[in-house]
Image 1 (cartoon, one colour):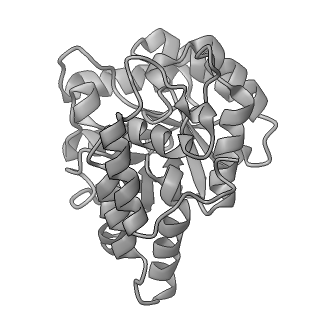
Image 2: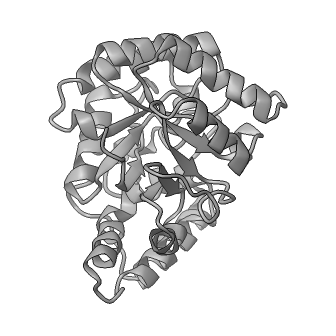
Length: 294
């Protein structure tokens, strides 16, 4: 399998007014991000509110996504605490020829490296054809991967453990594995990560920064002067002031009201927060591409 690399958006999910998943619009949103410059997307990641969406809705979306012209460009997040549900969901996905998954360890309970290795071992035993990008995000799941844990997983399962999304930022500078993809979880780490040999990024705010992020990525590999990275980082810093899902849905809703629909307990930004975000982005001369929220 070719090493996974590039600019990936942890794509947003789009909901109807009754808070059911709008499958057509969610797929359309992801495909537009690829058209805007992303090499791919992560469907049903944290930004996609995966933990709040029913398994049945996820499966319905996968059935439709299997006909997408960009089918091979998507990582499929699981967003499930249950091992059995994770395995069952992945079996459905692999039956539709999806092979690449973004999987975070279960939330809530406390555990260590030994238990995490057991968790992924059970998944791989049940779905041996899978390719897994580990998801390192202590803030959400309560566990932070160690370098040693990742190394052991890759040693045990070199054909299945193919990368890591590092949103805890303790791996991307020190982890060195051959033919292994490392994706920091923020545009703030994109350029430094590329300089260190990382593969790109997987981020929430690529829903808004796809074009800028791709320019930084392409300029790095073509040896051009970095004329876009500062603006990219300033945009990310403004979104970082808030819950990213709240900020992105608020930002998008200025162009399309359907993005006002968000799953509780998440919420849109309040009026003061919204004004602050939009004013600061306007000061950076940063606006949403008109094709994205159409």
